[in-house]
Image (cartoon, rainbow, N blue to C red; front, side):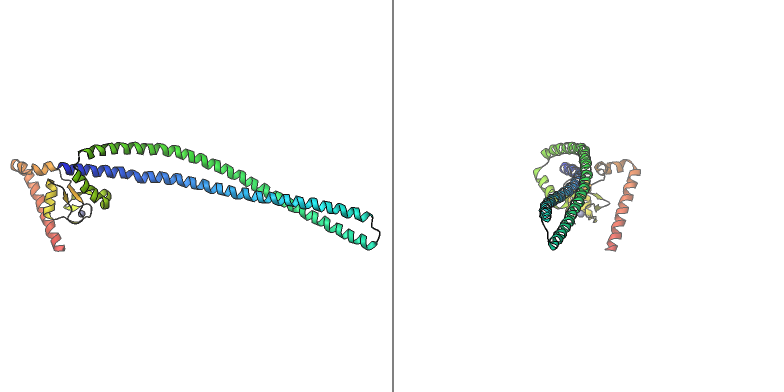
Length: 274
Ligand SMILES: [Zn+2]
């Protein structure tokens, strides 16, 4: 194989290998992000509960203030009632006292209800804290696990980059530019094999001239349909030594003949289809 072509085939294989790690890295990062996301959701819920506890406690404190006020009012009423003589005034004061007591009861009920709510919310908070701790532990474990996988990937990538650098130092600059230009759109299929006279990038059949050029691989040949760089998977040695072998052994010649026949037949078939 032409040395530049051979270098491009190797370079393309290295680039493909390097890129193959990206989905793995993305999958690991996605897993970590998902875990962090679930922890954030729990923390947000915790803040919501804390806020409602604060609101309830402020409510309780306000009710306590109202109870104190009500107590003062009741004291005044009872002080006043002892000095009253007129029946009507006594009755009115008694009604006031009864109403005041009812109000106190209602305020005390409010406190009891709100205190119970605080208790429930504090229990929820405790449960949530446990969940957050658990999730944080899981995250740490995941980070440890993935750190080693990421390290392995990094090491493998480093090794591949080393090989790539060595290759880039040898490769012809023009050839490299040509490859990079194709790689821009073809990504990891910039250099593809030709199999059964078809380009393995666009899967179109190449003409006999291109086929022959690719098989002999004396220069860099591109697919006439898509422009990808083609290389032959047929062992170059077989082709170059073919005439020599053919002279020496008839068996090999027969094989070669059969192959040629098949190709010719296929060409005929395909031209019919066209
Ligand atoms: Zn093609």
